[in-house]
Image (cartoon, rainbow, N blue to C red):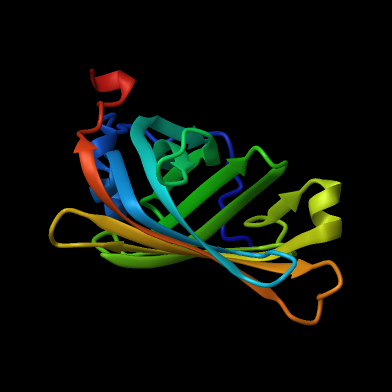
Length: 210
């Protein structure tokens, strides 16, 4: 039997339009954040290389979103990363963090200007301080898609992000992007990124409640 109702059109009634009040475990992440202690472990021809980075991430609430009876509250995000003391963008990423209250599901969508997109998910308690989301290349739903060159040279087969919400108001993450690199397919490479973020601005309320 399907986990979904046959009625795929009827939207929920009496939706609370204040997204900030309905973000579940994502609520502490809303706002603008900076981190200066980022660490990237990336693949190079001569082996793994470590790179420090500085990050700014904006997470702003969006109006509630429905797919028929399905209801999401979410944060739109933009990540800009540079190397210390440099202006050129080292990494840029956009997407959404979404919370589905009915199923206690958190979703992260991401897109990067290397021709790659992914969508990761996890079941998370509404008051969770630590949680993990996963995307798998072979998944038809929460998966990974890459341009032909990346599929050829750096095939991404798994993506995981672990989030930790700290009592001092900061939050941090560790990402593990598993790649099969051309010529070394029998040795999966774990591309690791981690950082600790401190709030520099409060979030702007979503348009429906401004």
